Length: 309
Image 1 (spheres, rainbow, N blue to C red):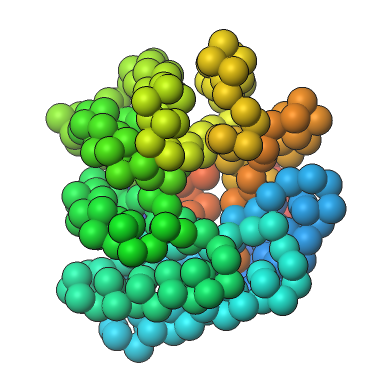
Image 2: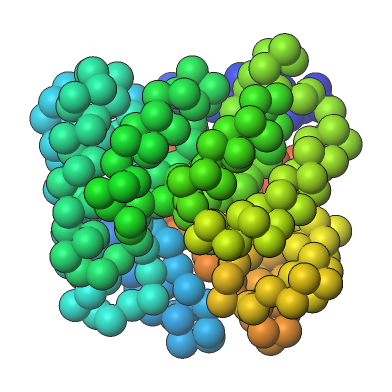
């Protein structure tokens, strides 16, 4: 718990990333979780995933941009990704952060850039997934999603099981018939906002599995993606789907590139739809540190290799 908190605190210190980027062993380790710096790197990984029966999601790493030009650049990258996904006939979709599209510059900026991406997604027949960031953005993100969902059926969102508010948010999303990813949450949050203990987070996640797979939710058109590498929670998804006779194409399991590829392959072999999130870009540090916080064993592996270097 202390190590996780430390890693999350360090994730906000980009100068450490600049130092790490100068070490060959660190760059090699980062490539376990980040496809590369260019879009082609990620799309090549996704083509390989598709060949093995797995779907893909691609994210251009970045968040909290400070200028309209940076937001416009990120938006253009996602528009081009949508074109390339269609041109290459990939089973993939983009997954983006609103602060990367300029939400911190004002809601109109973020909305305009997101709308541009959604328009291209609709034109290419591709879903666009809006990631969730820290709790400072939860309400704004869900409000924007609710505003745009009636116009853009290809718009999807994310909720985080560790937030105490999430059950109420899920009820709102059920009413909308939302396409929604359920993840545990990977940001440092105060205990009055988020459950601090893993056991509580896991229990909250399990309850939300049951809600998102409830007959009334599916009847309203809810399509859930369960983002977890926790085999017990995945078993709960599988068991609930079997008990309720839910077809395999009514939900999916989502995993992160570089984490438990063996599990993803096994789940696909069992007939489940599995999607792997593949990130790329230069701004990898915050994402990478949050992955270490989720699996501290990865940090031990990195430190051992640094020692050898």
